[in-house]
Image (cartoon, rainbow, N blue to C red):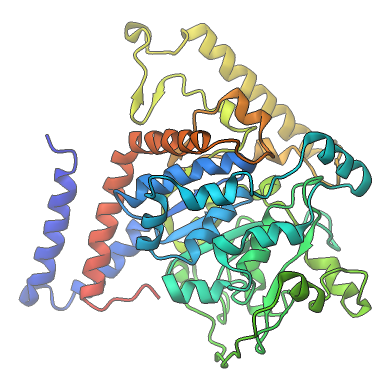
Length: 474
């Protein structure tokens, strides 16, 4: 039996409905508009994970050669690097890059010339002397191939139509516990992708907290402040979305329809600035907080740090913002991967252990013990966090690393080796290791591809129907 037979029949019924003009002419447009809204969109969320983020390339390769990419993409920390890569490239450009047999471009970025240079002795001395290993200027320079130095969220969306989101967390705020931010072409259209990725990757002791940069009307960069009150509620995405850009409070029934409305402020022409070195751009933007007193107040509110700590895979926020009813999560965080034991099997990899006894891997007793340890640790962390009894280290509440939701409707997890943990902040030592990581995650994605492809085929059929009828997403 063809597993996609029902999906193809559904696609055929959509085509029949579209062609029957006499019977459905009055209600056809309403039907497809409501059907598309009810079915929802699909989102791809890429977690953080330092150099384990290389495993994300395998996910992109599998999707590029099968179902294609969801329109909505979200990335955090290492995942933000890959999300920015997708933001500025069309599907065909991504397909060409990930299908390179030698993975030459990826090796140039993650090999010996990658961002994590230096010996462990040198890295330790940097932490002792400066409190961090790398300077964000060097990190932003490495992002040039991924997303350019000055490309903004708006410019990327206009080129590819992809709804790319990057999460980060305010480091210094007037109110303790400020919610994480989700940056996209709606909430921060003129913020540069490079500064957003850098802000999302500022792990304590690795890179110092940085400020977001936005491109002004003259093409020059400057520190970003959330000066647009119309986007402020969207920017802070914690557990609710009530206001869309340029509109007032919305009834819940209209939220998913109106949330796609672009800002209504007229777009003025922007002069392209002459190419400049990234150090000059940062220096002109007075990003270093001590150099310009005029930015002292605003800097207190916009310095960012790694988004993984509080919003690694914001499934709920993305669902509310873009009406996403299905999420594909590529989870490669080193502290999360060991918890994905799948004691009764998973998509594409069913358990064959003692089927007569329930198929528990390792037996019922060991599976129960593993589940008890995991749930008991999470319970204690939530209890201590609720009472505010956990100490902050480097200004970070590390309990969020474990107690936040880390799964989606389909969760893709790599087969991590012990040596991967030893090289979390090291460049790859060989091309062979790069190929192993990409091919391993591609295989794991293929195991879950049946669920993903069924979902994408139905959504694609609805998209084609709405496009033929002139029904816009906006």
